[in-house]
Length: 210
Image 1 (spheres, rainbow, N blue to C red):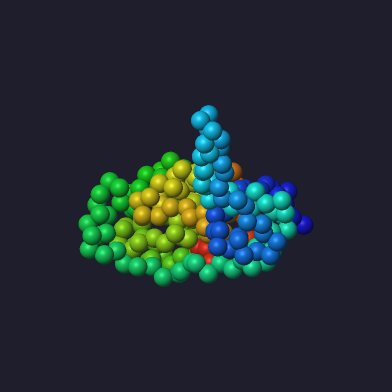
Image 2 (image 1 turned 120 degrees about the horizontal axis):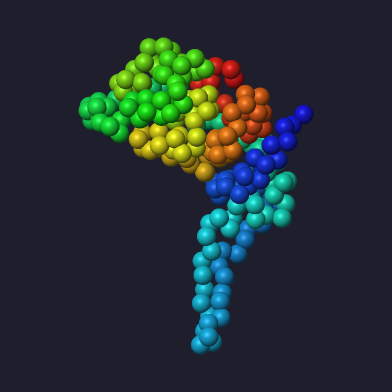
């Protein structure tokens, strides 16, 4: 039995998913007109190129069927469990006020958490976690997301952690759209998170209870 919120997640996904290469090849997808014409007062026509968002699933008459078809083809292949040691420049940067280690401590403090508290719900080697928190290893995107969901970070705080690592939410990736929805809507319930991941075939996270 599906949670009722999945329907809301589906609507959000249709509105925000931006991988047009995958969308346009779906059987039954109707390519929209990408230009519009406006008649000016002088009698001439002005042609506008419409934004790429015109191509999103939300604009399709059969969006439900198209989304179901897209879901059947989803496979989460973008995550890696390898952690890269910080390079020389990154090692110097770790002493900056904008380093990941210092930013993480600052964000955790907002939620009355320590790095030890945050580790409890993460499935990650203790030594690697300590090296990431000290700045000697670089975090991966899926680790930051795992941390955000288990520590109940806000969407804005997660974006902040992404930014200091040179990352951002990528709405051409199915998983990033799902993650952004969960954080924006403050969905931290374990069963609801599991349901959304199962619905969109999201896997390979560092969350202990998955």
